[in-house]
Length: 476
Image (cartoon, rainbow, N blue to C red):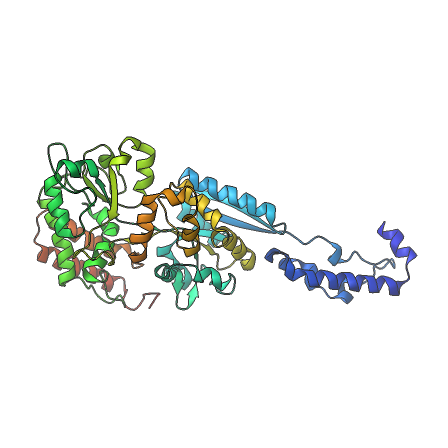
């Protein structure tokens, strides 16, 4: 058909037609989704595209060819089945509605992630988009492994984030990732029926550390411990960050990472609280389960348990028979001021790989999935049984009128009374948190608080010196 058209038209008419077609394609480029910008036809001049073939027939104009589809790799760490299903559902929906971009989703098991990513980066085949935790963003930005998003995602998307979460994804004046969710590390779960039996008001959970110890004694009885919180160094290392902020106003080292900052009244209060809770007998001598497991509480062996918000899902899935007797509250503060942080926020984001050749298209996917229609994220939070929380104001506003979300009082309490006051997890090496938590565990088991702090201080400073950590904070 093209041959007949070429032979029957004078060349001047053919050239004019091709110019009009080329201009039309160029003009439409900005109206397509961002994937169309990758079409080579959009950048070819009319004269270049209308070069006739040696046979005298016009060459097939590139502007007539369909825009080439941009294909992107997206790696997501494997979490709950509901999370994997949500990624697949909305990635499929994105692919259906964006004809010039195709996202290939790969779910990678957590224990294989580091090795697989390292091999891909070495081979120059790292995915265009990847999940990344808040704690890895600053170092990822410093190493050039992820790109800033300021020029790739509309600024209003970042304005929609809660102020205390913005800093989680910021290095300098650049945003390097977009949040998917936040999870507070410490929330107080308590048994209302046991409160009544002990003569305590089930609507008034403890708000100070002193009340936690007092209530714990009243609630402890044969077969039931009044209180549980992390009690080994591995769990204490991260679950105690919120209480460190609460009592000391900062974490374990100075902002320039030059030395430990724990030999002070704030940290002595933290060590004392854990020591008194353990030594008073309101906690089991051997932990009944890891910090992340609500099982002992669900089985009636604990009256109060400090655990992260993920326990909401555990209770709703496995211990439905006790839900009416469960209360939730912010973890108590050292002095009862519950606008002070008692938890840190972990969670996950999406970022664009530092070497992606299609950064704009990758950012378009992130914007669609995480920063666009609030109902997409509400769908995710429903799947998590509202045990995870939004970093976006507009999503929380939408949940207030959602039929299911608006009825969930646990969700509302955590969203309104824990998330706004929570802090970011530290980005310094884990060795520092572990040295500190080893000191807390030592104090719980009988070492004096002063000796335990002195040992932790020395271990932290030795690590800083050995690893030449001073002055390397990527956010300072």
